[in-house]
Image (cartoon, rainbow, N blue to C red; front, side, top):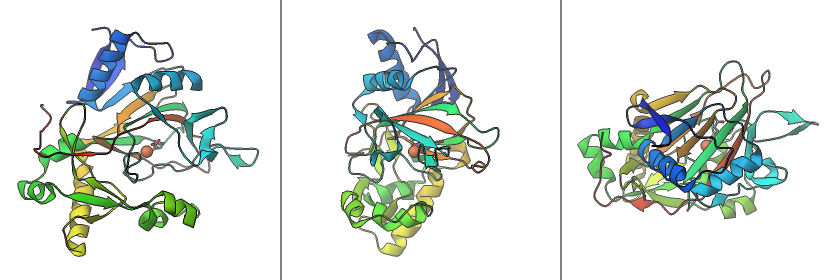
Length: 290
Ligand SMILES: O=C(O)CCC(=O)C(=O)O
Ligand SMILES: [Fe+2]
C-alpha cells in the first residue's frame, strides 16, 4: 500500500494520507485511490495545496470532466472549475451562492447525473458551513423489507422544472429555454453502482413521482425515502479546514451544505465534477459488505 486510508464511519468515508493531489500520481497510486474511493464512497484529503490547473489535472485522471452550465460561476480561464461561494468582487458574485443547501446528489435532475465531485476549500467561515454526507448504500441495506419490495424495479421522476422555485427561491425562475434543457428524467430508486456492483438508495430532492404508484402514495414514499436516506446513522459531517479536499461519489451518497452567516463571513470552494453514466437499475440487490 502506498496510501494510508483511515476509515471514518465504518465502511463509509475515509481520510487519505500519503498522497499529494497537486502532483501527477503514478498509475499504482491512482489505482489504490480508485479502489479506496469505490470502497468508502467519500475520501477526505487534508492540507492540500493545489492550483485550479492541478485540481483539474487530478480530477481528469478519474474520468472525463463535466463543465457546469451556465458558465457564469466557473473560474475564468478554467471552465472545469465551478466556484461555490458567497463572495462578491467588484459588485459581482464570483460563484454560486448557497449551492447545495439541501440534500441532493450532483446532477440527479439530469439524464446523466455526475459520477463524482471534488470540492476544495480555499476560504471557510469560522462557524457553520459544514457539509453533510449520507451513505446511501447503508440506507438501502437498512430499508424495511416492504419498502424494498415496493421500490424494486421502479423508477422515480426527478423534475427540475417543477421544483426549481422550491429549492432555489433566491434565484430567478427558469426561462423557457432553460426548462427545455432540463426535461423531467426517470431514475431507478434501487441503483446499481457500476464499479462496486452494490445497491444504493437513489432518491433526491427533485423526485416528484414514482412509476406505477398513485400520486399520493408516491409522495408519501418519496418523503419517507428522502428522510430515511439521511438518517443520522448514515451521515458524516465534514467540518472544513482550509486546504481540505473531499472527493465524493454521487452514485452512492447524498450531500448537503449547511448554513452559515453569509452576510458576514466568506466561504470559497472550488469544485471539479466528473461526468457519469445513466443510472443502472439494481435487478437483484447487492448489499455492501460490512
Ligand atoms: O458547499 C458545499 O458544502 C457543497 C455544495 C455542493 O452541493 C456542491 O459543491 O456540490
Ligand atoms: Fe452538490
